[in-house]
Length: 486
Image (cartoon, helix red, strand yellow):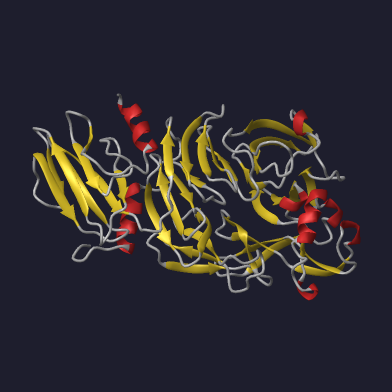
């Protein structure tokens, strides 16, 4: 078996138990109890184990002639030997192999008991170096291209939508499980990789929503929020004559929290643009609440992206993307949803021309100006897909350039994200489903992460060169120090 095949097998056994020392038959072999994830391979540097204070890590090493191995800074040895290391969750041990003046370090870190179960399968060469995800629960984590978590952070509440910022810090929203857009005591938080708090990032006025944070080139941030408006007649849709509704609002704030610009859907997007099939869910969702507390979510902002002077906003309940002139605040174009004066004609997508999106998420703009989006295909009688369009505002067209599906994913009820890498691959979190995948442009899987019983709102892929493994390991060591070590 060649190195690539061995790596694929090792990654596919992500939940395997421990056993005899793994590695090449005649070369270095390392095994562990509890088992290593993945099984040991000389080409893989980072591993995890379900070890801890009550489950000491026992390593079994085979170092062939001409090679020595040191465990946890101990004496270098050849031959076969065992080493016991007591670690707590998050702590790591380094196994150093030396031969002919060359040395290689292997890092083994103990997983917390509550860390989500997963299975990784590598069937190609990933173009991303890291995948930042938060499977439903209390953890945000960076997985590497072998499907191994190298960094993680546990929080009291779910660290929703963890996003790597340009300066290397991470922002997330501490989700408490309540309704979206109404938690005045919840805002985005920026943290360093070592877990230390940097700042709160909050909308000005209405509560900060959970769905999106974008750092702009000028260092400002885009956030979304849901202000309310009363006296709206919803009788045509099964609601009351004088209803309170959520509007969709995007704000640009400075690092210090000062509001410098905002845009609201109020007066610009009519409730008649809300998708017909959404009304049943919108109305039904309020029936159990007291009449005085009912607020109807008619637009539902879930992502935005800046394209020069144009802000593109995804409105889930409108099944549409809106291109907004930031200087004038007017809607320049609309892609999907009910037909309006701003609607673009769709080219090259005849199968979906009449329905386009179904509760889409995660709109992004690539360096070539094309627009990508994750189409949940909610209630569209088709599989979820990722799509890329070229927008021509002069011709009033949106031309489909790419679309991909995954045969394993049939339904995507909420969330989801799709990012196209500069090398051409796609990284997708199939919202409401347990798969996160990297795929080629032809749809061939390269890396798959499966989180049984869990799902990820999004995935933030990190290309090579932006964030080093050494940086992530050092941050973990800061959060989980070992006594007597620096």
